[in-house]
Image 1: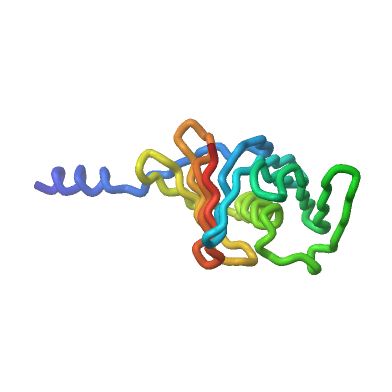
Image 2 (image 1 turned 120 degrees about the horizontal axis):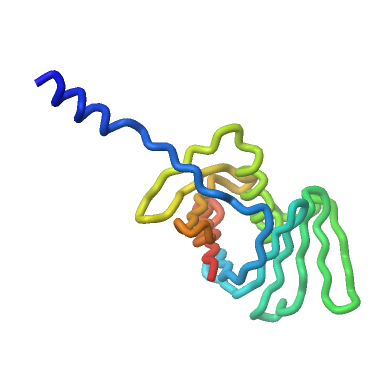
Length: 153
């Protein structure tokens, strides 16, 4: 009887998952905030994130954030702003903060739910959940406090 109980309890131990978060991405996504959504290209390199809308009137504009400055480029026009001059819901800022939060977390607790890895962290606009497929491709980012949803294609 004691051996049966020990066997059952040992099978209930906490499982540790170690998915890989790449440091560079170049993905298409649908970015939704409230009732507004648009398709975009998201590029994440080691030290910056850029978001390029592929639909809406902002199509072709490139928004880049490097942790300190937000840059808007459209054609030959370029405008830079310090981070504190830009709203925290700016898409490049949001995505940069999500990945910075994950990279700077001392130990990231990862849960396996519905055949996908789930990461939870915080940004300046609230708590986020990032879902990553078992193949390590990104599935989505959700920040309910800011009504932001990003679905990767």
